[in-house]
View 1 (cartoon, rainbow, N blue to C red):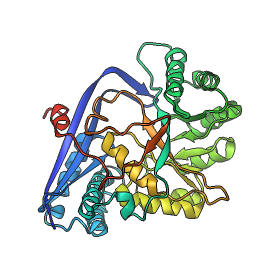
View 2 (view 1 turned 90 degrees about the vertical axis):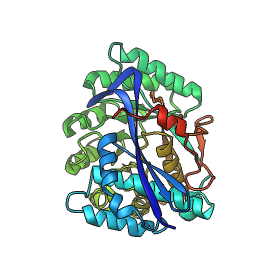
View 3 (view 1 turned 45 degrees about the horizontal axis):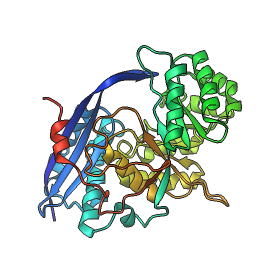
Length: 377
Protein backbone atom coordinates (compact mmCIF):
# COMPACT_ATOMS: atom_id res chain seq x y z
CA UNK A 1 0.00 0.00 0.00
CA UNK A 2 1.31 3.43 -1.00
CA UNK A 3 0.19 7.05 -0.76
CA UNK A 4 -1.28 7.96 -4.14
CA UNK A 5 -2.91 11.38 -3.58
CA UNK A 6 -2.65 14.33 -1.21
CA UNK A 7 -5.37 17.00 -1.05
CA UNK A 8 -5.94 20.05 1.12
CA UNK A 9 -9.41 21.50 1.71
CA UNK A 10 -9.51 25.12 2.87
CA UNK A 11 -12.92 25.75 4.40
CA UNK A 12 -14.42 29.10 5.35
CA UNK A 13 -17.72 30.27 6.78
CA UNK A 14 -18.79 33.79 7.79
CA UNK A 15 -20.14 34.27 11.28
CA UNK A 16 -23.61 35.64 11.92
CA UNK A 17 -22.14 37.51 14.87
CA UNK A 18 -18.42 38.34 14.84
CA UNK A 19 -16.63 37.83 18.13
CA UNK A 20 -13.30 38.63 19.72
CA UNK A 21 -10.94 37.74 22.53
CA UNK A 22 -8.08 39.53 24.23
CA UNK A 23 -5.69 39.69 21.29
CA UNK A 24 -7.83 39.25 18.18
CA UNK A 25 -11.26 39.27 16.57
CA UNK A 26 -12.82 37.23 13.77
CA UNK A 27 -15.71 37.50 11.33
CA UNK A 28 -15.21 33.99 9.88
CA UNK A 29 -14.27 30.45 10.90
CA UNK A 30 -11.60 28.81 8.73
CA UNK A 31 -9.78 25.51 8.65
CA UNK A 32 -7.38 23.44 6.59
CA UNK A 33 -8.34 19.78 6.27
CA UNK A 34 -5.88 17.21 4.96
CA UNK A 35 -6.97 14.26 2.81
CA UNK A 36 -4.55 11.43 2.01
CA UNK A 37 -5.61 8.67 -0.41
CA UNK A 38 -3.81 5.35 -0.87
CA UNK A 39 -3.50 3.26 -4.01
CA UNK A 40 -5.88 0.76 -2.39
CA UNK A 41 -8.62 3.39 -2.08
CA UNK A 42 -8.35 4.08 1.66
CA UNK A 43 -8.75 7.73 2.63
CA UNK A 44 -7.44 9.37 5.80
CA UNK A 45 -8.45 12.76 7.19
CA UNK A 46 -6.53 15.23 9.32
CA UNK A 47 -6.74 18.88 10.32
CA UNK A 48 -4.22 21.66 10.89
CA UNK A 49 -4.68 24.23 13.65
CA UNK A 50 -4.03 27.84 12.72
CA UNK A 51 -4.29 29.96 9.57
CA UNK A 52 -5.88 27.81 6.88
CA UNK A 53 -4.22 28.91 3.65
CA UNK A 54 -0.65 28.98 5.03
CA UNK A 55 -1.24 25.53 6.52
CA UNK A 56 -2.40 24.28 3.13
CA UNK A 57 0.74 25.69 1.52
CA UNK A 58 2.94 23.82 4.00
CA UNK A 59 1.08 20.54 3.51
CA UNK A 60 1.41 20.88 -0.26
CA UNK A 61 5.14 21.47 0.20
CA UNK A 62 5.29 17.98 1.72
CA UNK A 63 3.78 16.41 -1.40
CA UNK A 64 6.97 15.15 -3.04
CA UNK A 65 7.97 13.46 0.22
CA UNK A 66 4.59 11.78 0.72
CA UNK A 67 3.54 10.47 -2.67
CA UNK A 68 4.50 6.78 -2.97
CA UNK A 69 5.45 6.55 0.74
CA UNK A 70 4.17 3.72 2.93
CA UNK A 71 1.22 5.16 4.93
CA UNK A 72 1.70 2.54 7.66
CA UNK A 73 5.21 3.83 8.39
CA UNK A 74 3.99 6.80 10.38
CA UNK A 75 7.09 7.41 12.50
CA UNK A 76 9.35 7.14 9.45
CA UNK A 77 7.24 9.73 7.61
CA UNK A 78 7.08 12.03 10.65
CA UNK A 79 10.84 12.01 11.12
CA UNK A 80 11.49 12.46 7.41
CA UNK A 81 9.22 15.49 7.13
CA UNK A 82 10.56 17.01 10.33
CA UNK A 83 14.20 16.45 9.36
CA UNK A 84 13.77 17.92 5.88
CA UNK A 85 12.25 21.12 7.30
CA UNK A 86 14.10 21.25 10.64
CA UNK A 87 16.20 24.34 9.93
CA UNK A 88 13.17 26.61 9.62
CA UNK A 89 10.39 24.33 10.84
CA UNK A 90 10.87 23.37 14.48
CA UNK A 91 7.69 25.23 15.44
CA UNK A 92 4.70 26.99 13.94
CA UNK A 93 3.21 26.35 10.53
CA UNK A 94 5.50 23.49 9.53
CA UNK A 95 4.54 21.49 12.62
CA UNK A 96 0.85 22.38 12.20
CA UNK A 97 1.02 21.06 8.64
CA UNK A 98 2.86 17.97 9.82
CA UNK A 99 0.16 17.48 12.46
CA UNK A 100 -2.59 17.35 9.85
CA UNK A 101 -0.64 14.80 7.82
CA UNK A 102 0.09 12.65 10.86
CA UNK A 103 -3.56 12.56 11.93
CA UNK A 104 -4.63 11.55 8.41
CA UNK A 105 -2.06 8.73 8.39
CA UNK A 106 -3.38 7.42 11.71
CA UNK A 107 -6.88 7.48 10.21
CA UNK A 108 -5.63 5.35 7.29
CA UNK A 109 -3.87 2.88 9.58
CA UNK A 110 -6.98 2.44 11.66
CA UNK A 111 -9.07 1.81 8.57
CA UNK A 112 -6.48 -0.60 7.18
CA UNK A 113 -6.50 -2.69 10.36
CA UNK A 114 -10.22 -2.22 11.04
CA UNK A 115 -9.63 -0.65 14.46
CA UNK A 116 -9.98 2.78 16.09
CA UNK A 117 -6.81 4.78 16.46
CA UNK A 118 -6.89 4.41 20.23
CA UNK A 119 -6.76 0.62 19.89
CA UNK A 120 -3.63 0.86 17.76
CA UNK A 121 -2.11 3.26 20.31
CA UNK A 122 -2.40 0.72 23.12
CA UNK A 123 -6.07 0.37 23.93
CA UNK A 124 -8.48 2.73 25.68
CA UNK A 125 -8.03 3.74 29.30
CA UNK A 126 -11.50 5.30 29.09
CA UNK A 127 -14.46 5.11 26.71
CA UNK A 128 -15.86 8.59 27.37
CA UNK A 129 -14.50 11.86 28.62
CA UNK A 130 -15.98 14.76 30.53
CA UNK A 131 -16.13 17.97 28.54
CA UNK A 132 -15.96 21.59 29.59
CA UNK A 133 -17.47 24.35 27.48
CA UNK A 134 -15.34 26.95 25.74
CA UNK A 135 -16.93 30.19 24.61
CA UNK A 136 -17.70 33.52 26.30
CA UNK A 137 -16.09 35.47 23.47
CA UNK A 138 -16.63 39.22 23.32
CA UNK A 139 -19.29 40.74 21.10
CA UNK A 140 -18.91 44.12 19.46
CA UNK A 141 -21.71 46.07 21.15
CA UNK A 142 -23.04 44.72 24.44
CA UNK A 143 -22.24 44.43 28.12
CA UNK A 144 -20.24 41.23 28.87
CA UNK A 145 -21.64 41.19 32.39
CA UNK A 146 -24.96 40.57 30.67
CA UNK A 147 -24.36 38.30 27.65
CA UNK A 148 -21.37 36.36 29.03
CA UNK A 149 -23.17 35.53 32.26
CA UNK A 150 -26.23 34.52 30.26
CA UNK A 151 -24.02 32.22 28.18
CA UNK A 152 -22.40 30.48 31.15
CA UNK A 153 -25.85 29.81 32.57
CA UNK A 154 -26.87 28.31 29.25
CA UNK A 155 -23.85 26.00 29.29
CA UNK A 156 -24.76 24.76 32.73
CA UNK A 157 -28.33 24.16 31.56
CA UNK A 158 -26.94 22.09 28.67
CA UNK A 159 -25.31 19.75 31.18
CA UNK A 160 -21.70 20.93 31.21
CA UNK A 161 -19.96 20.75 34.57
CA UNK A 162 -17.41 23.40 33.70
CA UNK A 163 -16.95 26.49 31.54
CA UNK A 164 -13.89 28.45 30.44
CA UNK A 165 -14.10 32.23 30.71
CA UNK A 166 -12.28 34.48 28.26
CA UNK A 167 -10.46 37.31 30.03
CA UNK A 168 -7.59 39.67 29.27
CA UNK A 169 -9.74 42.51 27.96
CA UNK A 170 -9.77 44.90 30.92
CA UNK A 171 -8.29 44.13 34.33
CA UNK A 172 -11.11 45.35 36.58
CA UNK A 173 -13.82 44.17 34.20
CA UNK A 174 -12.18 40.73 34.16
CA UNK A 175 -12.33 40.51 37.94
CA UNK A 176 -15.98 41.54 38.00
CA UNK A 177 -16.79 39.03 35.26
CA UNK A 178 -15.02 36.16 37.05
CA UNK A 179 -16.92 36.81 40.27
CA UNK A 180 -20.23 37.15 38.43
CA UNK A 181 -19.60 33.88 36.54
CA UNK A 182 -18.84 32.03 39.76
CA UNK A 183 -22.02 33.33 41.33
CA UNK A 184 -24.02 32.36 38.24
CA UNK A 185 -22.82 28.74 38.03
CA UNK A 186 -22.65 28.07 41.75
CA UNK A 187 -19.83 26.72 43.92
CA UNK A 188 -19.73 23.14 42.58
CA UNK A 189 -19.23 23.72 38.85
CA UNK A 190 -15.76 24.14 37.37
CA UNK A 191 -14.58 27.57 36.23
CA UNK A 192 -11.43 28.11 34.14
CA UNK A 193 -9.81 31.35 32.97
CA UNK A 194 -8.15 31.97 29.61
CA UNK A 195 -6.31 35.24 28.99
CA UNK A 196 -4.85 34.25 25.58
CA UNK A 197 -1.49 35.68 26.75
CA UNK A 198 -2.86 39.21 27.22
CA UNK A 199 -1.16 40.09 30.53
CA UNK A 200 2.36 40.59 31.72
CA UNK A 201 3.52 38.68 34.79
CA UNK A 202 2.79 41.53 37.22
CA UNK A 203 -0.82 41.91 36.04
CA UNK A 204 -1.40 38.15 35.94
CA UNK A 205 -0.15 37.72 39.49
CA UNK A 206 -2.32 40.58 40.71
CA UNK A 207 -5.40 39.14 39.01
CA UNK A 208 -4.73 35.64 40.34
CA UNK A 209 -4.52 36.96 43.87
CA UNK A 210 -7.70 39.04 43.49
CA UNK A 211 -9.80 36.02 42.38
CA UNK A 212 -8.05 33.30 44.35
CA UNK A 213 -11.17 32.78 46.47
CA UNK A 214 -13.34 31.97 43.41
CA UNK A 215 -12.28 28.30 43.17
CA UNK A 216 -10.65 28.51 39.74
CA UNK A 217 -9.45 25.27 38.11
CA UNK A 218 -6.71 26.93 36.09
CA UNK A 219 -5.40 30.21 34.70
CA UNK A 220 -4.64 29.61 31.02
CA UNK A 221 -2.04 31.50 29.00
CA UNK A 222 -1.61 34.37 31.46
CA UNK A 223 1.46 35.65 29.57
CA UNK A 224 3.03 35.29 26.12
CA UNK A 225 3.93 31.67 25.34
CA UNK A 226 7.62 32.16 24.62
CA UNK A 227 8.34 33.76 28.02
CA UNK A 228 8.70 30.76 30.33
CA UNK A 229 10.39 32.89 32.99
CA UNK A 230 7.17 34.92 33.33
CA UNK A 231 5.17 31.69 33.51
CA UNK A 232 7.32 30.63 36.44
CA UNK A 233 6.78 34.02 38.10
CA UNK A 234 3.00 33.73 37.73
CA UNK A 235 3.02 30.13 38.95
CA UNK A 236 4.99 31.12 42.06
CA UNK A 237 3.27 34.45 42.68
CA UNK A 238 -0.40 33.46 42.91
CA UNK A 239 -2.29 30.31 43.96
CA UNK A 240 -4.30 29.35 40.83
CA UNK A 241 -2.81 26.47 38.78
CA UNK A 242 -1.17 27.80 35.61
CA UNK A 243 -1.93 26.24 32.21
CA UNK A 244 -0.55 26.78 28.72
CA UNK A 245 1.08 25.14 25.75
CA UNK A 246 -1.39 25.54 22.89
CA UNK A 247 1.31 27.60 21.13
CA UNK A 248 4.08 25.08 21.78
CA UNK A 249 5.29 22.33 19.48
CA UNK A 250 6.83 18.84 19.64
CA UNK A 251 8.53 17.02 22.49
CA UNK A 252 11.52 19.36 22.18
CA UNK A 253 9.38 22.40 22.86
CA UNK A 254 7.66 20.84 25.84
CA UNK A 255 10.81 19.49 27.49
CA UNK A 256 11.73 23.08 28.37
CA UNK A 257 8.33 23.56 30.01
CA UNK A 258 8.69 20.33 31.95
CA UNK A 259 12.23 20.80 33.18
CA UNK A 260 11.64 24.42 34.19
CA UNK A 261 8.35 23.57 35.97
CA UNK A 262 6.75 26.53 34.21
CA UNK A 263 3.20 25.13 34.12
CA UNK A 264 0.92 22.96 36.21
CA UNK A 265 -1.16 21.90 33.19
CA UNK A 266 -0.05 21.59 29.57
CA UNK A 267 -2.47 22.02 26.67
CA UNK A 268 -0.93 20.93 23.37
CA UNK A 269 -3.26 21.11 20.40
CA UNK A 270 -3.22 17.75 18.60
CA UNK A 271 -3.61 19.55 15.26
CA UNK A 272 -0.64 21.84 15.98
CA UNK A 273 1.92 20.24 18.28
CA UNK A 274 2.85 17.35 16.00
CA UNK A 275 -0.26 15.25 15.53
CA UNK A 276 -1.33 12.11 17.35
CA UNK A 277 2.14 10.55 17.19
CA UNK A 278 3.92 13.45 18.83
CA UNK A 279 1.18 14.34 21.30
CA UNK A 280 1.17 10.81 22.72
CA UNK A 281 4.91 11.22 23.34
CA UNK A 282 4.31 14.58 25.02
CA UNK A 283 1.56 13.07 27.19
CA UNK A 284 3.89 10.28 28.33
CA UNK A 285 6.57 12.85 29.17
CA UNK A 286 4.01 14.82 31.18
CA UNK A 287 3.35 11.75 33.28
CA UNK A 288 7.02 11.41 34.12
CA UNK A 289 7.14 15.04 35.23
CA UNK A 290 3.86 14.92 37.17
CA UNK A 291 2.20 17.58 35.02
CA UNK A 292 -1.43 17.35 33.90
CA UNK A 293 -2.29 17.00 30.20
CA UNK A 294 -5.52 18.59 28.95
CA UNK A 295 -5.40 19.15 25.18
CA UNK A 296 -6.44 22.35 23.48
CA UNK A 297 -9.22 21.80 20.91
CA UNK A 298 -10.57 24.51 18.61
CA UNK A 299 -11.40 23.24 15.15
CA UNK A 300 -13.83 21.18 13.13
CA UNK A 301 -15.24 17.76 13.94
CA UNK A 302 -12.03 16.19 12.60
CA UNK A 303 -9.96 18.02 15.22
CA UNK A 304 -12.46 16.96 17.87
CA UNK A 305 -12.26 13.32 16.76
CA UNK A 306 -8.45 13.38 16.85
CA UNK A 307 -8.49 14.83 20.38
CA UNK A 308 -10.93 12.15 21.52
CA UNK A 309 -8.76 9.34 20.13
CA UNK A 310 -5.79 10.76 22.02
CA UNK A 311 -7.76 11.29 25.22
CA UNK A 312 -8.69 7.61 25.16
CA UNK A 313 -5.04 6.69 25.73
CA UNK A 314 -3.67 9.66 27.68
CA UNK A 315 -2.22 8.29 30.94
CA UNK A 316 -3.45 9.56 34.26
CA UNK A 317 -1.47 12.63 35.20
CA UNK A 318 -0.01 13.07 37.63
CA UNK A 319 0.36 9.65 39.21
CA UNK A 320 -1.70 9.56 42.40
CA UNK A 321 -3.71 7.20 44.59
CA UNK A 322 -7.02 8.16 42.97
CA UNK A 323 -6.41 8.78 39.25
CA UNK A 324 -7.43 12.16 37.89
CA UNK A 325 -9.20 11.89 34.54
CA UNK A 326 -8.40 14.27 31.67
CA UNK A 327 -10.93 16.73 30.28
CA UNK A 328 -12.08 17.57 26.75
CA UNK A 329 -12.29 21.16 25.57
CA UNK A 330 -15.66 21.49 23.79
CA UNK A 331 -15.97 24.70 21.79
CA UNK A 332 -19.52 26.12 21.89
CA UNK A 333 -18.88 29.33 19.96
CA UNK A 334 -20.42 29.78 16.52
CA UNK A 335 -18.84 27.49 13.93
CA UNK A 336 -20.99 26.74 10.86
CA UNK A 337 -19.04 23.72 9.61
CA UNK A 338 -17.74 22.25 12.90
CA UNK A 339 -20.19 19.36 12.90
CA UNK A 340 -21.36 19.78 9.30
CA UNK A 341 -18.16 18.20 7.95
CA UNK A 342 -19.14 14.94 9.68
CA UNK A 343 -21.93 12.65 8.53
CA UNK A 344 -22.65 12.01 12.24
CA UNK A 345 -21.85 14.84 14.68
CA UNK A 346 -19.78 14.34 17.81
CA UNK A 347 -22.03 15.77 20.50
CA UNK A 348 -22.01 15.70 24.27
CA UNK A 349 -24.62 14.22 26.57
CA UNK A 350 -24.88 15.91 29.95
CA UNK A 351 -21.33 17.16 29.52
CA UNK A 352 -19.82 13.79 28.50
CA UNK A 353 -18.59 12.76 25.05
CA UNK A 354 -18.22 9.16 23.91
CA UNK A 355 -14.94 8.28 22.22
CA UNK A 356 -15.63 7.01 18.67
CA UNK A 357 -15.01 3.29 18.22
CA UNK A 358 -15.17 3.02 14.42
CA UNK A 359 -12.04 2.40 12.33
CA UNK A 360 -9.43 5.15 12.31
CA UNK A 361 -10.72 8.39 13.77
CA UNK A 362 -14.18 6.79 13.90
CA UNK A 363 -15.80 9.43 11.70
CA UNK A 364 -17.01 9.86 8.14
CA UNK A 365 -16.53 13.13 6.28
CA UNK A 366 -19.43 14.71 4.41
CA UNK A 367 -18.08 15.71 0.99
CA UNK A 368 -21.12 17.83 0.27
CA UNK A 369 -20.14 19.97 3.26
CA UNK A 370 -16.59 20.27 1.92
CA UNK A 371 -17.95 21.68 -1.32
CA UNK A 372 -20.47 23.90 0.46
CA UNK A 373 -17.86 25.52 2.72
CA UNK A 374 -14.91 25.54 0.31
CA UNK A 375 -13.12 28.89 0.46
CA UNK A 376 -13.08 30.91 -2.74
CA UNK A 377 -9.75 31.05 -4.53
